[in-house]
Length: 397
Image (cartoon, rainbow, N blue to C red; front, side, top):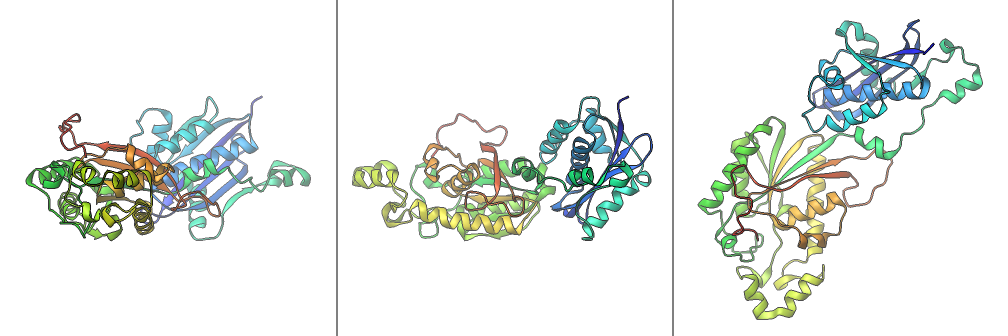
């Protein structure tokens, strides 16, 4: 006869998002005896992320301690139960990877049952114990299973999960990268640098472009912590429009200013090439070359990544809109993808376009490549607000 087990799972966040933990109990369905339980803090997260984490923890215990059993999952989260049952769509991007992982762990035939909160007190207690620092990890009820001591030792402690799985449990921080709208220099395709440049402001066309982008982003305003702005005029003016539409404050971050182009500022690419083609070729072929005596790509990369780290540290688990420029945005995208920074020469970013990257803090003690020491994913690149002609080539550079 096939063994039957029950998973009771819960999750909680003090602040939503805030300090979060999950609780999961694995029970024998026929006797009600506890096989194992897990209560673990997961850092800063939302209630929904914590609840999904509890489900995943319960399914992992079942896979380890009752690998051939039929499973019934009981939770007081209507959202998780309905989504895992397939009756509700999974729309929130933070939930999708968790649901995929839960589906991978759940054997065929796993059922999901909603229960009132008062019937889920065991899992809820584990959540609170983990949040209070009273417990962490899996406890196996050896005696209740009648296992001899040697088998009990084999049953625990739980093996360390692989990093490719563990990072999915970490709290995501999402950056919505918005390039500024057009200026007179943009239309004429002139080099336009940072604060040392002529620092043109947005044209009326540029303001309208950003207003369209801001209207488009308004649907995520409840998730946006702040608008972070380059201090350069065209980006800061874009940030002001975005912040007003989203109802959030502006944080100025000098590290997200555009590359300084020195004596090339205000000139077109063709004008610079006609004046000194060798200098242009050196710039395109070397990360250390300083265009017009301005900043090299390496110099820009260093300050942008320092600014990125500051923003990620200030806004853990939140969404931030960053109003910046072509070069800084490409540096962030290259860091997210862990590709060489010179890849930027193969990317296009339109004025007022939106690119989205999400960074995940790695599991404690893990060393990762890259300056930010985080896992990341590129979710969108060079998106334009609905109604904007994607194939209008006039302002591509």
